Length: 328
Ligand SMILES: NC(=O)c1ccc[n+]([C@@H]2O[C@H](COP(=O)([O-])OP(=O)(O)OC[C@H]3O[C@@H](n4cnc5c(N)ncnc54)[C@H](O)[C@@H]3O)[C@@H](O)[C@H]2O)c1
Image (cartoon, rainbow, N blue to C red; front, side):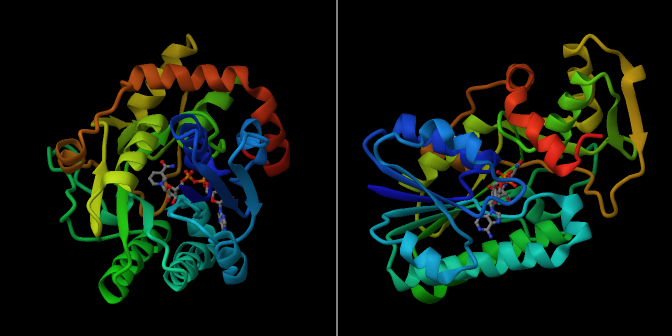
């Protein structure tokens, strides 16, 4: 079995590359990644040199490069994307180019080469937002109502994958998960950014009132879900991936403060992001009932493992701070 993993030098992709090589040691794994600011060769360095592992520096928008990389591939795991909402608000066209046109180019090359199976990784943000203080959750049948350029570009990519299925008989599965936490995440999103700020004695910054609710999952639990769906998921189906850890950003920040022995005086509220969705929550019954998936990590354990990882891997994140001016 030969697997092509796009975006495998990014946060979830690197975790998936580590997961895959340890759970499927006999398989070939090719990571295909453009190494944008969010992709780091260091994250997969330990895998390089292992039998069956290969890295290709390439852009999913480049059909020729994609075409070559797909030679002999049995399964594509598509994670490459621009993924940060704040960046999408500043530069939406890049998100359209990568997430929409890049996915289109990849689909076309997969179709041309008749790739047997394609798994597309997406986000809960395509469904829009839920009100606070309700028990409502998104399901696989919820309508798409993206509210910002990033989720709109991911929604477009999801539609393309389904359209290729309907029109060309393309063999795909799709998964949509909530917010991931864990190692190897570029320090611009809430958890890694807050950890690095706390490590340097700074405040934790929260957008607006901090009451925005997200559905958190430990990245390794997400990797296990991707593995199950890509192997055993019903073709043409979508699966929502949720560990049912609904927490407000403020609640996450308070748990982090406790892990660092700090109190609420270390919270700082900053101007909100435009169009900031209030709440996401996913119903993952299909995944649990059909494929027997369940998360293995509770949120507090996952958070403290993530804090420990950043504490002990300054050599991974220090060069990123210098190179990209984040975390100040
Ligand atoms: N992080 C989350 O919480 C989360 C939640 C749900 C879904 N997702 C989705 O999962 C996927 C991975 O997310 P992530 O958080 O690991 O993202 P990330 O930003 O950390 O990594 C993205 C990777 O894609 C690569 N990339 C970007 N443009 C590329 C291009 N044109 N060609 C080839 N490679 C390119 C980058 O170099 C990087 O390695 C994305 O599709 C994202 O939408 C993420």
